[in-house]
Image (cartoon, rainbow, N blue to C red; front, side, top):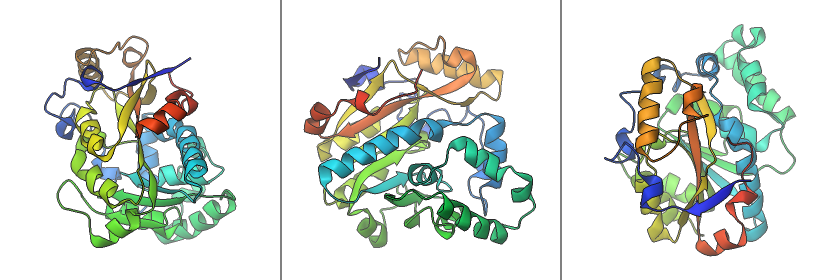
Length: 303
């Protein structure tokens, strides 16, 4: 059985004492070359080599959270996916597909033989054929303009914005799009973010928003969690529960992770010691919602 606890200072501290914005970026292998390509084939080929899997773990959690928001809001749910990349979380949220299906699809011989334009046409049909009957509306936010364009072209995102809220305020169009948001999701990129990305989106929303984030255990989520507090959100962490993110690419990466996790007061045994980065789940929402629906309602499949 898993447990949740309200996040305090000791829960959110890590070796990245200076905040999340620079957490681990020097020590970790960069995959920047695949994040903003015309289509996601390079992403799945390269990240598949290292068993990247966070969206797989997030799929059921996000589906349960969106369903809960639909029940309590009595309205269609708009999900805003931060660092949405090629729309992977939207694909898994709204389609009868798994992460393994996406790996097979984008690394298949047929996919390899197509131009980007041909792949887009194939993907439109592919996702339409697997669309769930009650999809949620998904807005994507990412600095990668090509990735956003792809996700829009194949129908994974209802709206998409290539904006960097760490560097500039959101455009009026993004503010308008964020107004009906009930759930904000994040499966990667927390190490690059601060409250600057989240706060204007929460301020634009017409109702209080839930924020669900999968964050590497090597990083501190405290600055972001503290930045959500003024919006009436209390942050909980799924205690003693973590999810494999990807395999380490080198001994150097593993040594960094072991040191950072240990410095954060976490135990790497059976997790980072086994060769994988692990992510923790944080959920921020109003205290009354946390009391009504324990975090364990939404969690499964962690280690």
